[in-house]
Amino acid sequence: MRRDGGGILDGRAVAPAVLCGWEEVVVRLPGAGDVFAGYRIVRRLGAGGMGTVYLAEHPRLPRRDAVKVLDPELAADPGYRARFEREAELAARLEHPNVVAVYDRGREGEFLWIAMRYVDGVDAGELVAAEPAGLPAERAVGIVAAAARGLDAAHRRGLLHRDVKPANILVSTDDDGADVVRLTDFGIARSLDAAATTSGSVLASFAYAAPETFAGGPLDARTDVYALGCTLYEMLTGAVPFARRSPAAAMQAHLYEPPPRPSATHPALAAFDPVIARALAKVPAHRYGSCGELARAATAALAANTPHRSAPHRMAPPPPSATTGPAGGPGVTPADLSPAPHPTASAQPRTPSEPGIAGPAGPPRSARLLLIATTVAALVVAAAVAAVLVRGNSTAGTPVATPSPATITTPPTTTTPTITTSAWGPAAYIVAAFPDLLPSEPTGTGYQGMRCARNDDEGSWLHCPATTDDGINVNIRCDPSRAPVTYRSDTLGLTDIHEEPWTRPSGSGTIRWATDDTAGFGLLDVAFDDPDRHFCLVSASGGSGGQDVYDRWWRSAPL
Image 1 (tube, one colour):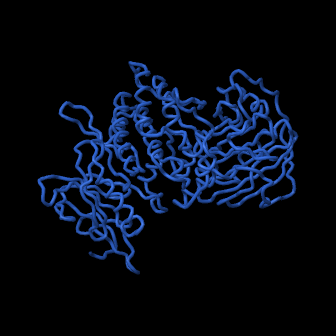
Image 2 (cartoon, rainbow, N blue to C red; image 1 turned 180 degrees about the horizontal axis):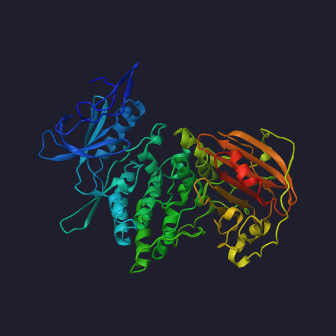
Image 3 (cartoon, one colour; image 1 turned 135 degrees about the horizontal axis):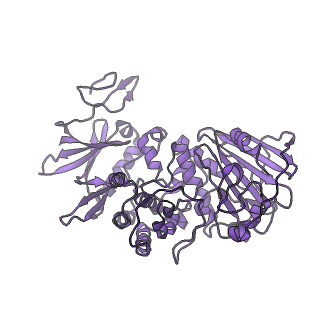
């Protein structure tokens, strides 16, 4: 091993520097013609955030394998090294026509490596790049169905993939020109540590990551179902479901925003809308139970789809609407579409199964796991903690700060818009309670141009997503039985917390705002005293912090 100041050694690329005592040790990656772990390197096939893949000649057999060499920082982590060795062994036992075979694994100096079958083809991401309007639905569903068979086989053996995305789905052709699909990188492709969150490749993986990945909840087969659903969406439309410019924005979208509808990009894909909605449910219990179940639903949607697609085109997506699941399956509930917390009655907290509070029928503790962050990465923790800010009853604890009441004068309101009850359905009472804040019709716009949609069938929740990356998301959760609701006092992981009473000509209540510095956005909650609105909780999130939301949204909000 040579010690050098970095850069290029002998004209070849070097791995990231590794600290050894007080010295910085630069480790050279193998190059063409080198012998590495007995393999003779032919050429580099590609590189990602976790390592580099080479085409290499087997040391004893007349065969060429794909040898993935992981970055040395990973080998230096005992926990990752143990997981790598364990899961590489599990993957090696997995023999399936839709999974890239793993032949061997080991450690060579500072590097972990794994030898796999070489697939002479392209990955699904390259196929999408070649057809930016989306693959033909038949091909997209066929690729997903084949990948689902491989994933289900792995799940039956206790092996999760954890990084399902088009780049990890390899596609070659058989003698008849038909697609041959194989999954690669089972369990070894990524490490969501604090350092990894800054890499472009991991940011790309965020586009397919399930909410529980960010929130520190348990991972199971349904985590891969979510990622496969994101992959299907991208192959159908040519775009990832939650395209954002930063990790914080991407995580916030996965945690808060409803799944986009494929028909918003191409109307002929309307049959796939409920498939994507269920696959991308926020709560694992509301997703398909297996990847095969998702594939079967996609195949059924394909059969119901318009036989001849018109020329693909792009159009601005309309506001999302509540979507029901496939026949025989659960619909998309509020908890599916956003982990924004339910308001609770101030006198007696209700469980989701009780009348008046919309929510999943499954155990509330499982849904709660999605909202309580643990240490995965500093950025991940912060984004997940944001989901628990507005849960529960404010009387359960002591406010962090209680300044004197703030009296804010707002301009006189204009004529109350006509509420289109037939259009808003059971949520019309929410719009009637906030006529100057919300659009009078689902197709209209409200305060600051926001568009809103119902997120449940009971009429307990309106979601108004931000229209820009630095915009403000608004969620209004109400009790259809008109019982008073408010927020809890738990402020786990938040900073710069403020809480105060407020008074305006329209009424009074309490407001709380806080900042999660690491995630880079704020949360603000408004509760009401007057009987015309005390059954609702208005929550706003986004911006650069709690004070930013307060200044840009609350000060002029027509409440």
